[in-house]
Length: 269
Image (cartoon, rainbow, N blue to C red; front, side, top):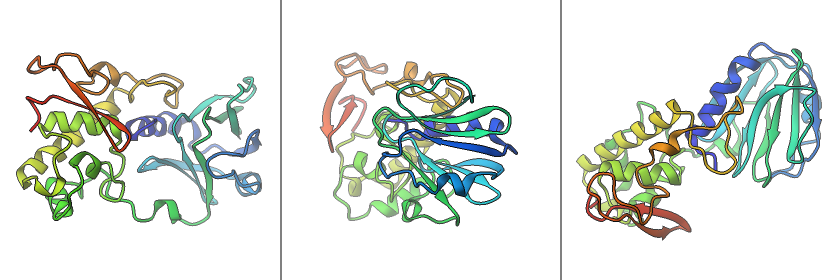
């Protein structure tokens, strides 16, 4: 599943290509995504000029002079710039054709993503989201305060989008290892200093992944059609049964909330 670094990589990849470009056509080959693509999308966006691209949580927000196109990549989606005349593949569901003979092409084999048109800045999917993990408002003190009297595991706590956005499974595994915190520890029983280390680890892991272009897993490619390379640096995720890179102990795997959690029982307490 594309996580925050993958979405940020996509935003940065497409931004230079859509800036000041005008929409001249919309092609909807398949509207049945997680939420159906509105049949009014074409009339809403036709002739609009893109002003910029930004990200909120895992949502790509492309501002125009008429409103905002909001895209979620779901579990297997990608949004790429390509020649408008390039033949569409089976899972290429939507094209936003630009005035320079290129298009934004939305590809999604599992169709769990979504495309919405926002005439205002707010949307129900954007409400109640926590702070951005790379923002100044996200800190160890914030995590400590939000975690009080909570019994949920720390891994599930930091993956809660109402607490902090964009810390998906891969990066939660990595950040908890870097901070030396056992993923099954109760979030309400972790000291403030350790939350400080965890907040720093989340920022470091996500920043590094963004710099490397995201994580190459299954279907993900960035906005330029190229895969990310952070997977080469994963410390624990996907390495169950292999030696810890720090202490050489065998990494273990458990399931939490239906997701794989890999950790080192010696390095993480």
